[in-house]
Image (cartoon, rainbow, N blue to C red):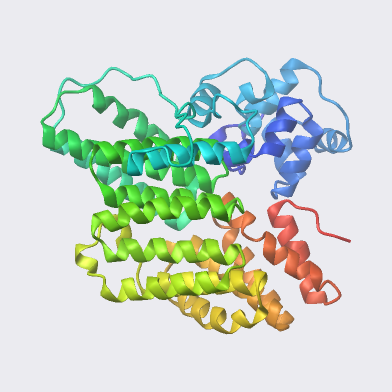
Length: 461
């Protein structure tokens, strides 16, 4: 029997199984498609054979289209590769139950993504300003997990444990990507949620609301980073409710800033702008210039995606002004990450967007700003550095400096390969497109093909 078939020794990242194309192939039990998708993720035929206990010739035949029908073989493949068996309609196991409970889609999976965005906007508006500005607040998408038996009483020490765990897990997310810690965040939430049923003083309870809100906030962010959008939305919704109960406007601003980033990533800048504007209200109520500046910079990004350079530049200017006035020592904890390096990163990102949507002249501002950020981001911000390298490569391609753009693009892929982040792959799509446009250049062609292999997309011939 294969001795390499434990999940702990598997070279396959757990988030691979939750990608939509893979989930569809697993649901149909199309093992040939599953194996081909694994090959895209860099898993060799030899590794597949070792993990599943099959010979390499069997794996080769399946890759060529041979069907696998036997239940025991399907089960052995699922166990060997580390696939939650429920994803293949096999006997439900504990691993599947935990993951499905943690990543369940909304009760109405047939809804269009734009409808889900509108529902979140309605809920966010209701929580932030006390009225459903964008329509009736459905709230049905917010999950209500079954509560486990609560401890009898909790104190401030218990709450500090939640806060410490959140800080440690957030550091892992920044450095290695959401896939490195999301399961641990969800597990921590399972433990933390039960505290809501315990007795405590009013002071402890208010701080508990804020601590759990921030943990849900991190769960939302790591879900987003691994491509689990419905799960992200659910966690952000619960985070917003708890932050409101904890009367923490600064944290509400942070949650809305993060949800707005989700919508930017989905190329829905109009909805992103609405969420940022709600976050702006909370940031202003918190009295933090730094929080206000962060929201302004992200509003600028939304306007840049919409091709509105005048508004984007105006808001970037305000972001600079708010940053220059900010007292970092008095800023909310979540906003303190935003320093001169992050401001340069945002300036570079917004101008990169404008260079693509409005005029290539904006590369002249984007390149030095991105260069400053890239040279100063430490190893603990590897994901941010990968985003900036991707943007820098795009700018050089737009300027016609193809060889240098391709070199930086390869650096972006090299760094991103070490991260457990679906988002880094998706952020490379504009780079792939720009490289494809210049495919007659061998450096650009090689970059386009490499990005396509890394992201699992097909490059144009």
